[in-house]
Image 1: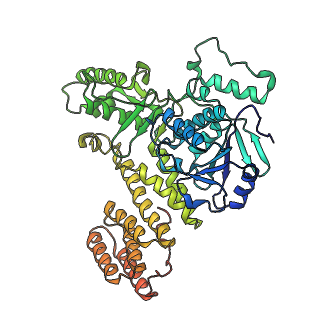
Image 2: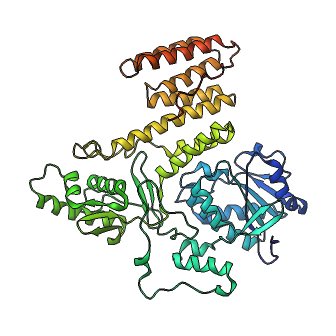
Image 3: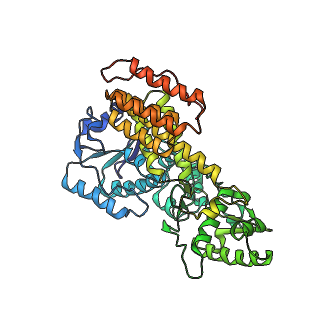
Length: 497
């Protein structure tokens, strides 16, 4: 245990289930006893048991890669100046779940807080809900806070990295700092290599699995942020958006080439495969190779350098920095986490996670790529992945509806279930959830109409047993209570979805 030193402020993380108010109260009791206790939360009603001055939630909290850290820091300083008695600020980190790029935003938040506590001598305790954290966010939080808070006091975090090491240092410098914190006689030493250290580093992340999780990571200026759901958007070099339309480039070709290489990960693609993908009707192999060389040169220029695409023999691959962020990975993590919470009937937490997942799903995979590349007869590289993710989004919406209905919010549940139907008009589970929402509101005619809508949509696709199952679900709803409460579920037909 380590008490906060008098010479600097306290940048601490408190990990707890938000439902475990006793643990949270015990962890914060020492700070509350000192007075000057303030709370900043996006949901003011979330913490009725915490005796603290409520502050308006800072609108400038980092919700995008372009959010200026100076603006966020200025907001914190303004709050401190307007409340001179402030000694401790508790920040509900639920906001990090509701923004894309949550892990990168947590790292930025850690740097902002470190600056603030050092200049103000005010303790800041960032409160994380362990029920909703996904892997990337947890790893970022471990790098970003100097202390961990618990009922037994403050504990020094051996994995904390100073902001400068997160922002600009090499991986070797980061590990050297961490080693020095654990082994005192190694403090100040750096890993050194006589030869280029970049040549000894591991492989770049794969298409979906992403980077190997580690405590030390490439700097924030090196990492890429890649949005594939909906329009393809890529941010490199300190979150600068990639300009596909540079002079001499063919933007559609560049975007298609990037997406194609991205889906192939570290194994890359052969020159002939790339040429056939982009120019299937070209008059000769030499013409394809010449055009490919030019397109690769333009794509490298858009991405920021010759080392962004590497060649090995006759194959090319993207050289994505380790620790880069891909929305697909975050989307899948959130969907899996939400399903786990739903199965354990933690509906409130499941709703929060599903809301975050919905913000990430901006549309089908590579929705803005020209159809001739997506539906290529040469290679079915995109559609299976697109269908898989689309189905996951449909399930996300009707599972979200289930959680909302369990919380007694049938109108909101109806909207979610109807969105699932919009995405997949013949999906039986989506229609069943819409019927349950109508039944919960006592709208029995609407319940019946929803079944007939499903029947019309499913006639060409669903087997008779599936249609009979949906009819049985509707009849069970009519056989249940008539006071608006839906009848208990007869079973989960989509357990394997």
